[in-house]
Length: 156
Image (cartoon, rainbow, N blue to C red; front, side, top):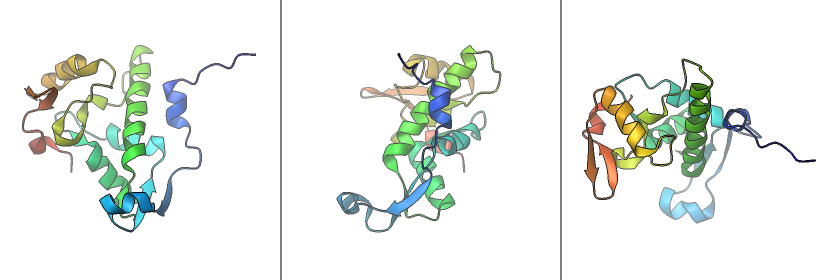
């Protein structure tokens, strides 16, 4: 019997044993120092992304800071924060296709340096259209597409 593949929404709602706070692994101490790492549940990352208002932006690093603060940890997990933002973006696209009017504004979540995430639904082109419609200007820096002066629009 074949099992059906999980939808993005199902992946988003599947928290497994998360969130949890663990000691920063030795292999990561050189980059992040000693302390604790907060590993969020996917829905926590989505909740932060959902709060970003029109015209504002957030980066994965800022999401990690918010996760760390919420769980009183030294850092927020850099790996799961990025993966869960990606899952949230695709779950939002499923909602959009299903005709749900309010879905996570994933295009407002940028990579470090204000870079548009090419792996989000619609790729750079669609996200650029959505960002420009909200008053942002998109420029090319090397091979990346960046929101110009993105720092001025970061969600607090």
